[in-house]
Amino acid sequence: MISTSNLSIQFGKRILFDEVNVTFKKGNCYGIIGANGAGKSTFLKVLSGEIQPNSGSVNIEPGNRLSILEQNQNAYDDYTVLDSTIMGNSPLYKIKKEMDFLYSKENFTDEDGIKVGELQNKYEEMDGWNADSEAASLLSQLGVEESLHYTKLSEIDLKLKVRVLLAQSLFGNPDILIMDEPTNNLDFETIKWLQHFLSNYENTVIVVSHDRYFLDSVCTHISDIDYGKISHYSGNYTFWYESSQLALKQRAQQNKKAEEKKKELEEFIARFSANVAKSKQATSRKKMIEKLNIEDIKPSSRRYPGIIFEIERSLGDQILNIESLNTSLINDFSTIINNGDKVIFYSKNPKIVDSFYNEILLMNESVKWGTTVSKSYIPENYDSFFEKNLSLVDWLRQWSKNDEEREEVYIRGFLGKMLFSGEEALKSCTVLSGGEKVRCMLSKMMMEKSNFLILNEPTNHLDLESITALNNSLINFKGNIFLTTQDFQFANSVGNRVIEIGTKGYIDKLMNFGEYLNDEKVKILREKIY
Image (tube, rainbow, N blue to C red; front, side):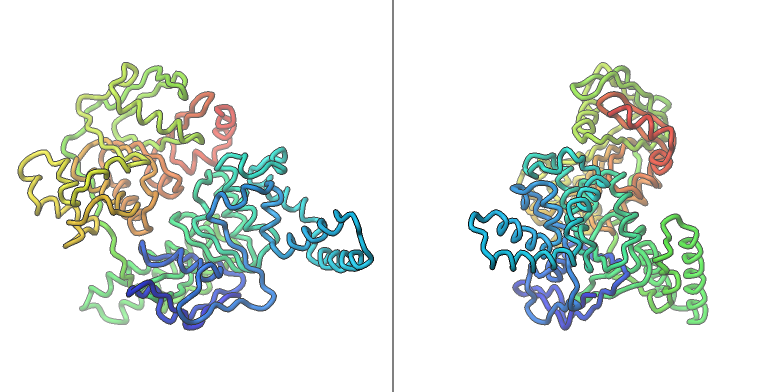
């Protein structure tokens, strides 16, 4: 168990947390949510001891060991994969290194022998003799092959390094596990493994994630950061979101009687409880259904961007025909995209994704677009769009098509929908955060009114509110879509077709993403294309 007592954090004049008193109990998984800048990552750093609060304290139950998911991917470059994993249990690793040092001494004394004996007893109590095998097993489950276990982290691929650091945080069954964006740079299979692991984890888990499906899969509670306070709500993210929206709607219904509102809330809880009980994600450990109550349902103060993609021109029958597309990474790829296709484009190699999008956007003899198609693209790296020192109004004006659209009032309307209101619309585009840049790119896309949207990892840097709004908008979009995303819920709810390109071939299936990942025949095909 871990708790805070009157915890306050202030940066300059800005008060981030004001006398926060919260307790995180054993057996629960807490999803920390909050708007961009609310202090989610800062709070985790305070809990872990990396940042000291201005006042108040963090209290860890005596005897409890805390483990964090390392954010510095180069922190353990000088250590082997196996040692880096075991270092997740620092007391155990310290004893191991001390014993190794004593054994390596040329002049081994009687005192050294007594010391080694004491250390061995402690090591045995901590199950140290099985540490290597347990670490190796954990690494193998995460897809890190045994042949790499004695390789230095500096010598392995970034995606594998991320898995090693994940194994490090999980090693030794820590009493308190703190994780900031644990699904970043993980493939869907590894995320699924982590979901299963945490769903059955008996100790305390505190996690920050922008992946809604992940939060729904593992969380028993949502911890909402708002106005410098933290409030716990029973249930997963979907319950928090839907219940807060219902409460917000009820607050606007001034004429509705209190008894009617109470009945509506009770019916909502009953429906949600029944759905969770039937869900594959539900586990015997997590009986959050029993804990849901009306007191948990409160309106949220969150602001959701107004993302609406209108179409200037309807699509005809001819959309996109690709015949024998060849690049240095893509071999003889052919497909026909039909009206209404919302394609999840995926590859385990991100360079293939970039290569594909670059090729279809160029005038290429292998790529034939229909005459009615108008395209709008958000690349994974959009920094080049923000190099000129322009106000947001002037920045967005670059994509105006006529005099009316060039008017400041018209442009401010788009920016306002994306939460850039008042003076915010006049700040320089060169000082924007990652999330603000994405919202600007979405404003550009809305202004273009294209009928074919191409989005490469659009949820990167977005908060949960913006992801939810974008997700709903793409579901309702009347045109065609190419979408690449690591957000499972996003992909599964938007797409009706999946195209996956590997180094040795490709797969093209008319099904949603969840069906695609779980189809046994597809699994065999996926092994063959890499």
